[in-house]
Structures are given as C-alpha cells and as structure tokens.
Image (cartoon, rainbow, N blue to C red):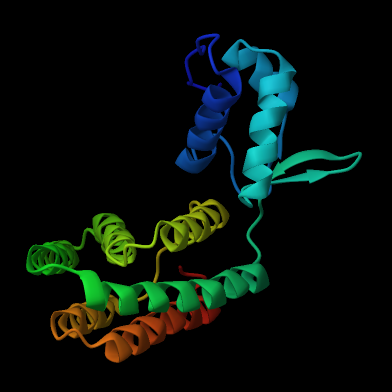
Length: 220
C-alpha cells in the first residue's frame, strides 16, 4: 500500500503532484513500465480524481508517465534508445553549463566541487557505490547550477528525472568509477583556469562516455 499520508485540502493539484512524484521515484511500489491506477491514488490520497489527473498531466509533460488511450496510465518504461537520446541532449546542455560555470564560478564554489570529489573518492574506496552515485549526481547538479542559467538548470533537472525514473532498481555494474572521478577533477580544473572551451569539451566527453557505458551495462 502507498505510504503517503492523506493530504490537506489546499492546493490539491500541487500536493497530489508532489506526493505521486515522490512515490514513483522511491521505487518502493512502482517499477518502470507498471500501470498506475488513478482511482487507487485518489482513494489513498483522500482526494477526487481531478487533482490526481492534473498531477498526472504534469508528470506526463516531464516524461515520467505515459497516458495511453483506452489502456490507462503507465510509469515510463526502460527504453535504451530513448535513454541514449536523452543523454545526447544532456551532453549538449551540461557542456554549455560547464562553459558558463568557467566564467562565473567563485573560488569558494570551486572548493565546494573539490570537496565533493574527495567524498566521491572516499565512497569508492569504501565500496559504497550507491553513496558514490548520489554524490556524483550532486556534483553534476551543482556544476550545472554554477552556470547561472536557471532555464538551462531546469532543463537538465528534467532530464535527470527521466533518467532516474527509467532506471529505477537497475543494476549498477562497471568498475570505471575512478576514471569518472578523474574526469570530474579535469572538469573542475578547467573551471579553475577559466577555460570555457576545455570545461565544455571535457564535460561533453564525460557525458558521452557515461552514455556509451549503457551499451554493456545498462548503466546511467
């Protein structure tokens, strides 16, 4: 059963959206490709179907669910070809963000990124791959934010949400975490040098290699 508490009757569509989105991304109840019952969600959240459908419409626009005529609502399924397409867009956007960050990042912000890399190294050493992955994701998010372009940051966040949804509970294989972290170092050093060309090129190559790794390991 869904653990989300009954929501208050104010701004129901927004609250329904947050509750359903959180439930989907935990991976505790729904897996990619699962059918979602609007009636069950309405009953469990204690609201009518209208705010639930409004939430579903937002989640569909974000690429997290699919509404199929005469079939129902489905959590987005794993699709390697679609995932590769998302990574192509991610490469372009994160590369642009890195170029902007090379122009804008402060010395303190660069130190912040270096501390993140230290934590990544520690998690790899401890064999804590899930913690490493979370820290690496935070590193990418922060690097994108340092570009100072809210529209770009928002678009990248949407891509991350789609990747996360499609890849819930998939095996995290591969042994190239040290190499990935070395590339994070190179990205930060390019920022420190104020070298926008290098920051963009290194970041784009890094994202491209992440996409390539999916061919062998279904890894994001």
